[in-house]
Image (cartoon, rainbow, N blue to C red):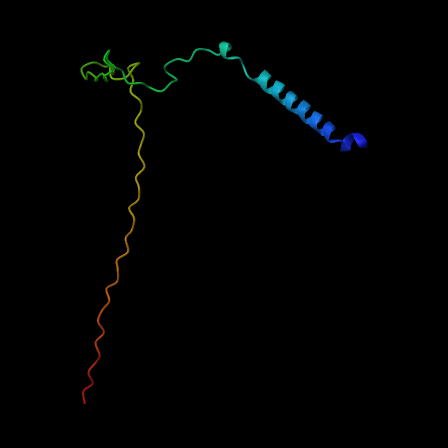
Length: 103
């Protein structure tokens, strides 16, 4: 019973548990050298540039898009339309008129 109540025992158990978890994580991960090289098709499209660093324009007479590296432009995403806020009209205060009694 004294062994379970000793704080040093709990500390050593925690260290062993952390070490076991880290070794399992390292087995699941593959080293970076064995990963296949990423191709440009999976990365984000980049704009083509001239030697001065300026953007290259697309030539519409050719089927290839010269403005983008790889020849394909990224797909356009739809933008969300924001709903217009409804503005409540202010009520106009009417003047109260007293009725004149016919006497």
